[in-house]
Image (cartoon, rainbow, N blue to C red):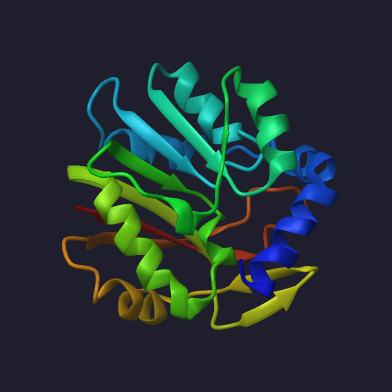
Length: 198
């Protein structure tokens, strides 16, 4: 485990309770609908870096099958209690699935992976998707990379994202779009959203 990842996971383990409280009520229903309309009925979704379990619960409540994973032991415990099923504790690098999911949801999670490791993670996600499956991911908008508030962040622009995805055989970008932060008092923060298809 790299020093950057170790520090980031330590942050989430130490502050799991306050992180969950700060994110669990964020209304992402518009993004959920945008993603779910691409998937078959009763699709199997991987919530990759599920954090509080907010999105996994929304998908479960809507009748989808969900596998949720997170690298933080603290978040896994709290999210598991919240969604009523086990959350697997593993890092993105430990994802070894083959054509298992109709959709992969990675909301504000892959942004903790260093830029030079992201292409490898996108390759793992592509392997995990069924043919025709969809990926949703979001990153803070910009070109910053480094530590911020005790965690490691990789911000992306459309150009930086395209350069990462280009070497990933079998994954194409369907669309990118920029949104504001839905949390109270954070509306000025911009997010780059991407939908990809295998």
